Length: 134
Image 1 (cartoon, one colour):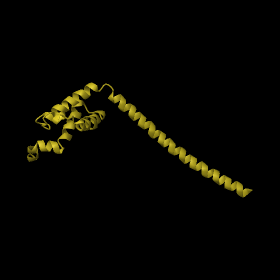
Image 2 (cartoon, rainbow, N blue to C red):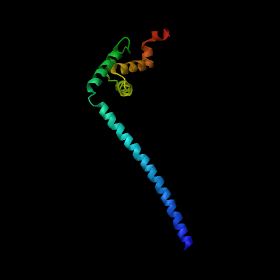
Image 3 (cartoon, helix red, strand yellow):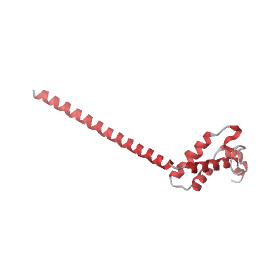
Image 4 (cartoon, rainbow, N blue to C red):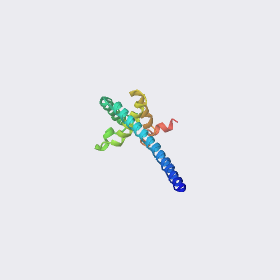
């Protein structure tokens, strides 16, 4: 009888340990989920009322793409009659907005976009004279 009780007690301890570990993992998962929800809510709040800013930024990017100091693309973001959605996504969302959310002003975030564009093969190809100045 004692042996049976000892085995039952050992099994109960094992089950309790497994459940405690599972609860700790669930608690960590729940905390991660809450953090993700807070980040999503924060991003949503940050995007509210940004339509005018994004229009200004897209117009600025269009002008930069056409400009002699920019990519010198005839048609800018619509070169060849096709919208360059990859450029818009990369420069406005991935670069510009990231810097705005980090606290940069519109002008500072735009300058970061210019700096990033100047590191691209397309810009270097449009400005071979820049390589000579270095």
